[in-house]
Amino acid sequence: MRRFLKLLIDTPIDIGSAVKFKKGTPVVSHVGEVVSFIGVGERMKYEVYLLNKRCKHRTKSDGSYYRYTVLANKCKHVDINFKLRTSKSYEIGDVVRHGKFPGAKYGVVVGFVHPDGMLTKSYEEGYNGTDLICCVEIDKRTLTRKRLPGGLNFKRFTCTNKRLKICEVDLWDRKGPKVTP
Image (cartoon, rainbow, N blue to C red):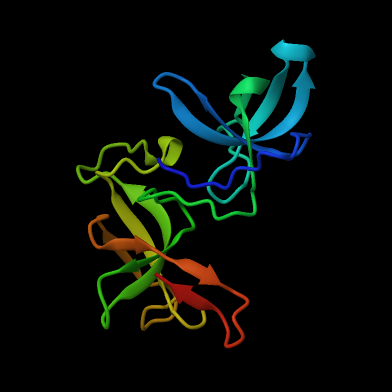
């Protein structure tokens, strides 16, 4: 997962600052929020809660946060207001476009299904590339869910990641909500 972040070199790291660091086997880059300092001097460490791409704290199944202890010299201060972008990593709640213009469908990701009906790991570990993506179809202009002719259920579609693209939503456009692919 690649992230493009703006580094803040001149500003010191405080509690509440966003930092980028590498940890784990294999070594993976993470983004987190500093919540406490441990020690002083060269061996000072930060206690960091991991953030997802929406800049929210990642939680485990029991409700606790993913937490790391990282050496201070291994962290880089980043601007959290800068665009945090990942490539081809779908999460529940993403607004997506399926197909090409003019017959494109817009939807919100609501789940993942393994093609063979087996249990999927995409909920815990992120989208793995083989699962099918379940979406609820939405209207591009109003962002409301579309309903079936009976009026009780929502329109759904399931697709692979081949013709699916993550969209950005601008809620503060002067003409109303704007979806940009």
